[in-house]
Image 1: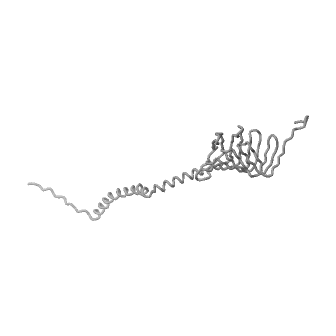
Image 2 (image 1 turned 90 degrees about the vertical axis):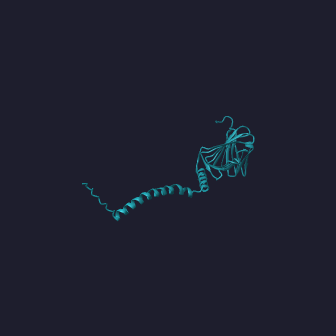
Image 3 (image 1 turned 60 degrees about the vertical axis):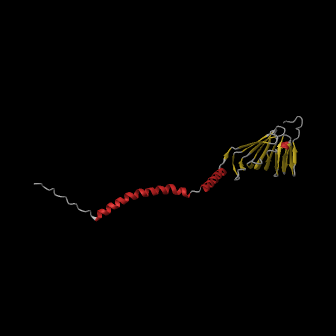
Length: 216
């Protein structure tokens, strides 16, 4: 006689078990979708908000501001006049004084000029402004003009036309050289040093020859 295997009864799941299973399945679907949304927000949204034209303008403005504030150490500017004679402008430090970088603010500037007779004049000051386009230089504070033959002028302000080899000042001037001492209310140097004119009220003291037999 055959024996029948007893059947195992199957109990239906409880309602709370079904709810948990549905939540787990839903969570498996939502977590990857949320991660994808985060990636999209981080990558796509900044690109949508960016303005290429505005960004380029801001970059140019930042570069211009950096150029204006950056100081140049021991700058040197060189050139030649209409006859090919050289001149040079140097300084301790310099920075741009205009947005177009035409004007340069100089600290302890010095200009070297080759004169028509082949001699040199060195001009120094406490500060100055150099026009890179017209090659003019305005000087202020302890302006000193020294000629290589021993002549020296001291004043408080002057301007130089470097290509033309001219200089001029309207402040009181004191000068000295091998032949004497001079004081005036201003000066002009023309024709690359061929003419030196003292303007306004002037006083000249010439050094006399020492008497024969006197001690030097």
